[in-house]
Image 1 (cartoon, rainbow, N blue to C red):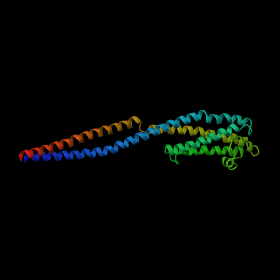
Image 2: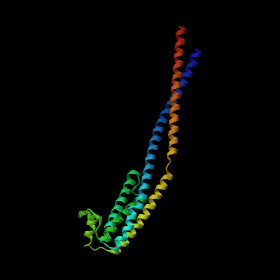
Image 3: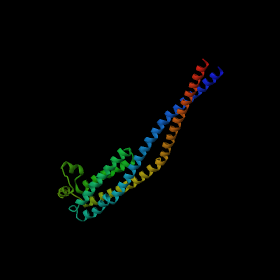
Image 4: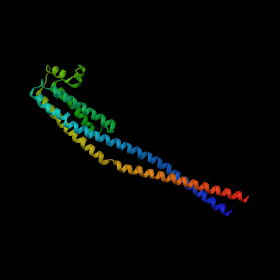
Length: 241
């Protein structure tokens, strides 16, 4: 009777321990899934930042450089020689819009953020350059179904264009662009510094995986032990009868 009581207590303790390990296993399964998803999201986020950094670097040595270079060509033969400048202005406008979409949809940047406001400022200033310099905004050009820079320049030659406004508005646009790229680079730097690195998150994933494996093995051994004890009790009982 005493032996049975001891076995009963031991089995009870093993069952309680098994339930505890099962709880740990369940909680850690959630944590493992969470850290895996976080690792995936962080990897995608860093990939997006890397692509953004590459894009801004390329734009600064191509699109924006073209805008600055063609500014002088346009200035020397205004407005007839401004077709390439206006093409670069359109590309700059489109890039600002692309960045707005990237920051909002891919990097989840709030529209209230100062960087987003700077993007909107550059986008709007391209329109101001068109309106103040050539007396024809992008919206007005769209309404008149103008589809190319050459069509635009041909049309504005009959309007009240202004070389003085062109010089002033372009200067303001370039200043805004320089500030924008400086802000973007700083934002990327701050975001990287404030985010957990992939190796750190990977350590959490590995730890969670090890706990899962250890819990599963421990649970299996405990269940097998309980089963062995119960089978031994049954054998002893049969021999006694």
